[in-house]
Amino acid sequence: MCRWIAYHGDPIFLDELILEPSNSLIEQSLNCREGSTATNGDGFGVGWYGLHEDPGLYREVLPAWNDRNLRHLARQIRSPLFFAHVRASTGTETARVNCHPFAHGRWLFMHNGQIGGYARCRRRLEALLGDRLYQHRKGSTDSELMFLLMVQNGLDDDPMWAMRETIVQISDAAQSCAVLEPFSLTICLADGKRVFACRHASAEDAPTLYWRQDEAGVLVASEPSDDMTARWNSVEPDSILVVDGATTVHPLFEAATPTQDSHALDHLAKVG
Image (cartoon, rainbow, N blue to C red; front, top):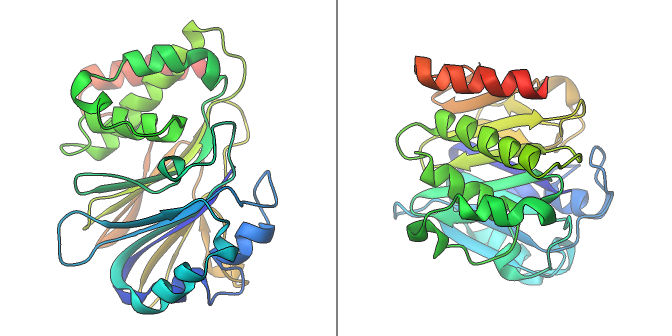
C-alpha cells in the first residue's frame, strides 16, 4: 500500500508538511504505523499549486528518504495546497510515470489501496476509458486509470458524483470478471481551491483516513503525521471529506439525482 498527506490553508513550506513532524511522511516511508506494509520505498511524489491554474509536480523512483533533491526543494517551495505521497507498489513496476500524485488539467490525484484482481479486469476497465483520455494514460497503475475514469465521469462538474460513479464502474467490472479480492481505497483530489478525500472498501477493512484542523489550515492524511492523535478525526468508511472553506463529511453514496441514486443503491445492494 502507500502513505499520503494533503494540506489546504495558509501558505506553508513543504518541509513543514513532510519532514518536520514526528511521524512525517519521510518517517512513514521508512516505518509507517497503520499501513499494511511497513516500508514505502517504491518512489514518491509531491504536487502543489502556485501562480498557475495547473499544479506543479515532482516525482521520482528513489525512496523518499534517499532523495536529497526533495529535501532542498521542500525548504524552498511554499504553497497553500500541497499533496505528498510515498509508494508501495501493489504489482506494477517502479517507474516515474507510476508515481503519485497524478495530474490532469487543474486536478491532482493520489491513492492508497488497490483494485483487487487488477490484472484480470484491467482490460475491461481500460475499455471504459474513451480515446480522448486514454491518450493521457502514461503509466500502468490502477490508480492512474481510476483518476482518468473520474475525469471522464465529470470531475470538473461534480467531483463527488465522479468519485461515486467511478467506484461503481470499477466494482461492476470486477464482479463481471469474477474477482474475489477486495477493492479498497483512500483517494485524495484537489483542483487548486478545494480538496476531496474518499474512503471505501468492498470488504470490511477500508484503508485509514484522517483529517485535522489547526490554526494554519487543514491536514488530510492516511495516518496522523504527529503524536497528537487526539487532534485527528477519523473518517468513516464510505464517506467523502470536502475541504472548501469549511470541512464537511458526506455519505459516499448520497446521490445528486434520482437516476444516480438508483445506480448507487443498486451498487450498495451488490456489495453489502
